[in-house]
Length: 206
Image (cartoon, rainbow, N blue to C red; front, top):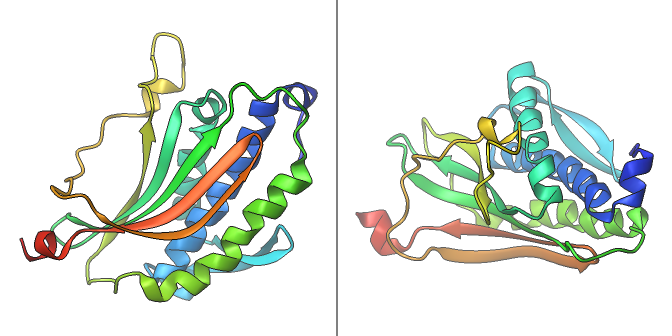
């Protein structure tokens, strides 16, 4: 991946760019594995020396790309805590969330070993297909969206990118969710956890 000189001098900037590229491919992989769209809506590509899937449809591809790249300045500053793929049933109630919990060490000042970061992130793509059996069956007429959870709200007066993010009106579960860990890694200055959240059985009945 190409990085400019400024990124090489800024560990947080370089890490954020690697992470954003990873999230774009990982979110596409989640949507492919869940079978939200026919397999023909995706094409096979190589990423980190693995075969992954890229969306063929321009609107789908642009939604994922623009949403994730819009997080770049906030990930670089450590403002983003989680990025989630939320799947909804026909009543617009969430039934499953794939959550990427991220942490970019803001005090890290050494050079980023890009190959080491990518090697650690690569393992998520190996683990994702294996975890498919742990996820819920896709209901009819489902939809999905990408939601970011910020540690602190972006200030629109100081960032031109803050205006594209608006508070979500997504229905929230009333009880703490059931959590299924999928994969985690930590190599300075980046930490990533991937887990799946499901509502409790009591909540599903309601």
